[in-house]
Every structure is written in C-alpha cells, then in structure tokens.
Image 1 (cartoon, rainbow, N blue to C red):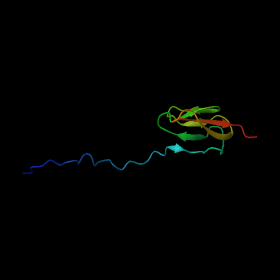
Image 2 (image 1 turned 45 degrees about the vertical axis):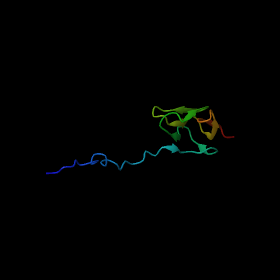
Image 3 (image 1 turned 30 degrees about the vertical axis):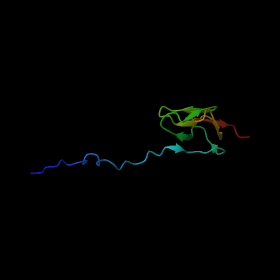
Image 4 (image 1 turned 180 degrees about the horizontal axis):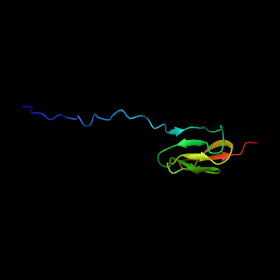
Length: 86
C-alpha cells in the first residue's frame, strides 16, 4: 500500500503550449498596405493613432496605404500611426 500521494502529476500535464505569435509585425518606417496588421497584442500595450484601427482581439491594423510611425503616448504606452507615403 502506497503511503505517498502522486505529487504534482496534474501540474506537469499540458505544459507544451505553442506560442501565440504576438508582437510587432511591421516596424517603424516600413511600408504597409491597407488592412495590414501592425501589432498583435493582448491588452492595450500599443494604442491606435491616425489611420489605424483596433480589432476586437486588440490587434492594430492600418486603414490606408502608407508608412508606419511609432510615438510615445505615456511612459509605458506607444501610439501607432500610419502616414501617407509621398
């Protein structure tokens, strides 16, 4: 008869979870087409600025063809804008 429980057997199950591919997809100064995703994020780390929108999963996308520009909004948050290319 065993005198010890199976310690931590549940904690080790399901540990290999694949990454969600979050982060910046198009960097500042890069060209982007309308509808292109700039950032995939959880929560509002980056805020949408001019000519950008935020999807319901907090992804930020471009509304026009242009150049991506990052600017500080606060100490922790950045704002993302898309400026028309000349």
